[in-house]
Image (cartoon, rainbow over all chains, first blue to last red; front, side):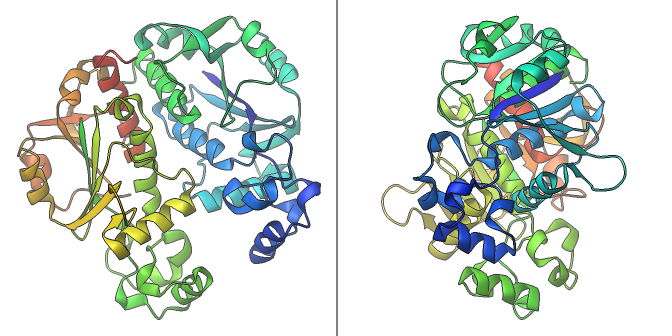
Length: 221
Length: 221
């Protein structure tokens, strides 16, 4: 199973708000420059009112939750899963199946900041995460051009019937807190559109269910 | 499904290390007294060398992960789940099924610190979390005296065959990072002992699987 978390709400603090007091105070406290820290709704809320599309930005916690759910699963431990994080401004983070993502949120944020600074982490040796500039269409093309997507418009189907397909699919899940994909073609051109339950679920919840179904299909559970 | 996260690695900074520089610096930064902040391995690592059983302490992130996995599930949203957090020094946090646990780790930590200070949160109105002094035996007795437990000594059984039992059970999962239950009777006296996969999994992973199985059994997935 290849997971693509798409349009994730993960980015460095954008230039427009580098001089906002909430950003400056946070950067100073952490001994970094404003452009070196991740945008975070909890810390930069007052500054974010100045940003376009603010509701869908500044949520590194979503990416963290998703990676914890994915990387520590049996699926990943058995080498049957690989995750790519695509961000709203078209960066892609390729995550090694061996990467033990920091469980502590603040350590995770620091690691991603290092990744944006250096292009890979750790800086030496086999990288556990690598950062590229790449749009979603190119990423999905490189992964074979065929994908499934979780979206509320999808047909509901028992979870137990999704597992074996998910296990061998490129699976796209939205990494944003509200609204819909801006790349509408992700849903329109998907080979399969899955839906879970009757209400929208967090990305991490969707991934927990999808991974569990794939693990059952792989005979791991 | 009633979840009991047992012997969780959640506590206020203990008196022995109130005067350690790592603790003092963190407390000062947060404008609190050392005895008012949660012990956290990431922040208090140098001080924790002075503590007994340190390996199993100072991991509020485990409780956070578990509550995110549980409270935002379809099971909880449909009122079919309730969580209790039992801590290693015999506090119990009763979590309302309606509680929307903060997704940001730092906000979660601040909320739990408020809970230890006030005994409930929010301080006024219907509490979303309440804190009691209560040992694990008393808690399980009050919940009916019959429970299932996840433990590596358990018999493996396909996940799909656990769901309907889990849905109506009191389910105990360890909330500590290493080792085994100190209350050994939790496993010995359990009505059922479940095991998942062939290696030990994080508490949040176990709960994701157990909740998913129960949701399937309830017809939600």
